[in-house]
Amino acid sequence: MLRLIAKSLTAGFLTLTLTLPAAAFETRARAAWVYDLTTETVLMNKEAQTPLPPASMSKLMTLNMLFEALRDGRVTLDTRFSVSTRAKNMGGSTMFLNETDRPSVEELIQGIIVLSGNDACVVVAEGLAGTEDNFARLMNDRARVLGLENSTFANASGWPNPNQRMSVEDLGKLAIRFITEFPEYYGYFGQHEFPYDNRAPQNRYNRNPLLKLGIGADGLKTGHTEEAGYGLVGSATQGTRRVVFVLSGLATEADRAQESERIVNWAFRQFAEKSVAEKGHEFARADVWMGDQTEVGLVAAEDISVLLPGSQLEKLSGEVIYTGPFEAPITQGDTLAELVIPREDLPEARIPLVADRSIARGGLAPRLRTAFMVLKDKLEGQTGLAVAE
Image (cartoon, rainbow, N blue to C red; front, side, top):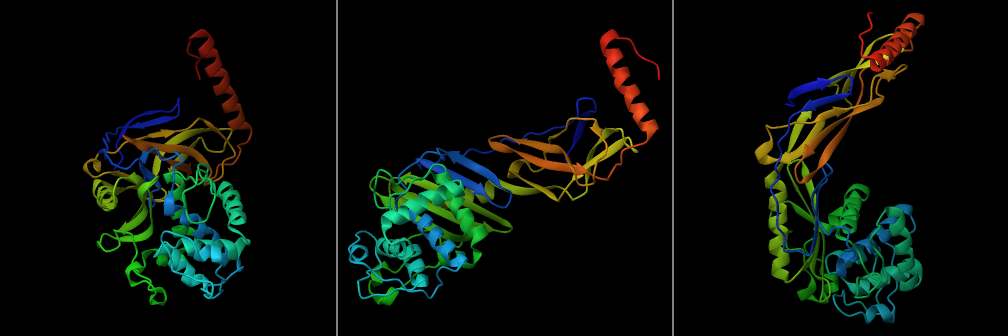
């Protein structure tokens, strides 16, 4: 429970005690971002806004463009695209497409996610925008709309290019977008293998090292180039919680596998969700001026839960912050205050509190009482003498 220590009605503060030392996690990754999606809490931010070479992790943006085309009805899963010589000649990871193929959109999705096919990315780019250059321009335009502020694109595949850059936070935002906006397609990210036409049995398996570990991992995308190092955009669920994370710049494939598993275990074992209060719980009462009632309750608008270090679940504190007194009229459900719970090494939790009732503007008597209180406070402030009521 939240423990009440002191209350100052004049300043509008309700103070509670908190001690929340969060256990630090030292990662070998050059950049890392870990996010608890269930409670919307950033657990780690290491150079998360720095634009870096994303390698094949930037294929997530290509998939976003394709998923948006599916959502808008411009293509269906059964739509077939042609394969250009340029696409066929792409090096690196591949679906082994050739000019006689007409892969479906669904096959291309699997080819990009499971096989990391550079050829599949070019096929999608040309199929949606005519040329890969046009597609890159559309990717950049869409990135600005989606708030990917530290990303620029020069191609659809993540092929090394000085203008192909993404921050790990932006990659995490895309991962969250797939989970929340495109749940009907998210299952492809957990697919273990895709033997496209049995053309390359050795290249049929998903490179995500977490999928086979039984720790709740169900996506999303690996990446590697000499410039970028080894990286992974991942997500996992355990119980009611989902964690999304991005690692970039690891030295070896083994480092990527080990660090990803460590991150998942740390996020789920070090932190736990704590129920603070149910909807309607009153945290404080505040004075009301000019109303037919003199006080309003400040209550939880919804059930409140916060993410805390596991060792600190019984030590919870915070402040109710508002600027009062409030002037009537007030409508039930109006946001009047915030419950602020500081957390060491984590962003503070800020939870809105709302009015528990509607308060109408009062008649002559409440207005006179309010005018007297204002005059009383002013005179006492000027003279230092108490004014009798």
